[in-house]
Image (tube, rainbow, N blue to C red):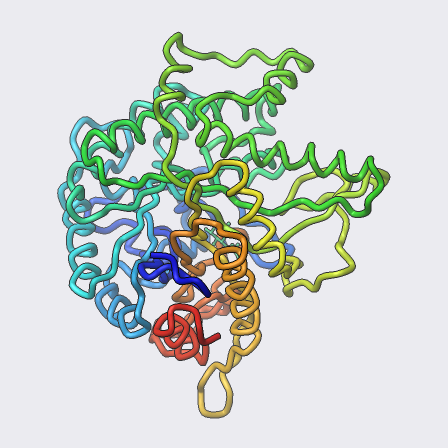
Length: 479
Ligand code: BG6
């Protein structure tokens, strides 16, 4: 039921992580090597390296992550204390199918997630599950070339079917591919690799290869949506995109047009998954560039029948483009013409802070699809320093989240956007995706583990823990 001034009664307040960024236990319980297991640690301005297999002597932060694999009960008790209604994580594909192409799943991996979901449900916390969050089996990359191969569609559908059947009475909310549009930035190997196990710059026609991969993933996503609805008609299965709205730098018509074209490069991902067909602007682009995307005869019907139920998205920042700017090499956006927006601030990692952009985004997505939305990531990555009593007083994080929730509330209460929930990213400190750092932190819960190798993984509550607790308790009224 809609509360006139704010959030609906059953709004899903919670937090989000991904298996590879929290679990650790990378070789336990029969788990196979995932693509995250071959990524070294990096830093701000120092890229993570994709190694050829796991190499001795190299540092791979995701191998241990924050030991959620063995400490999840303690962590879930803390989520419950904060009042979480839901918890978003992923199922590590390699715990279920260690190599990805086996016929039979690994029972130990399935049991782990049974136990994890039971623990959540014990506290009335709904699991929200991403099927693929940057952690596909490494074997599928080596043996098949990742998602460039059509074979991977079947492997992914098999994996998804196994877990959707197994957890059909425990999990209602699903998403297929996390931030599927990151690979649009194919120039930057980490993004393509994490989304689909492909380093696009190694292909003769990288952009065409990216479209081929996208097509395979869209078909896989649509098949999984149809299958999921057949397994349990109550399932809510979303797509998941990284939403970074791109503003025109000025009202110069060429800036406005450039921004619209840049947004097409984001929207194409949700357009196919929400509307069930490749959009005209992309078909025209393929024709212009002479791209030939291989499709099976029944793919169009598969896409049409497998539209997602809601738009899940992450929101951290906005960007701006200027038609006469020289091409800016920005690894986060990858778009030509990206310039700093002089009207907003930025985090230490250069992510521009723009709460109003969240309301703008919610309206833009709702007007485009008229489907429920779910903010499944939002947050502020920062270096946290304990005070003399050992407590982290993360007012900067509270300020960021407060401002974003206030805008989100306007979108719901003033603009009428249908919003299902809000799961801030990294509710417990975890390994950063882009840099592999521990020191880039998002959590309400501090994990004592640092990039210099120190720390015993002990958990403690930050100031934001108590703040978020009262946000949830008041259903967003007390910010
Ligand atoms: C999103 C990802 O890109 O942003 C997460 O879905 C990631 O996996 C999050 O961790 C924050 O990015 P980072 O690089 O600060 O960890």
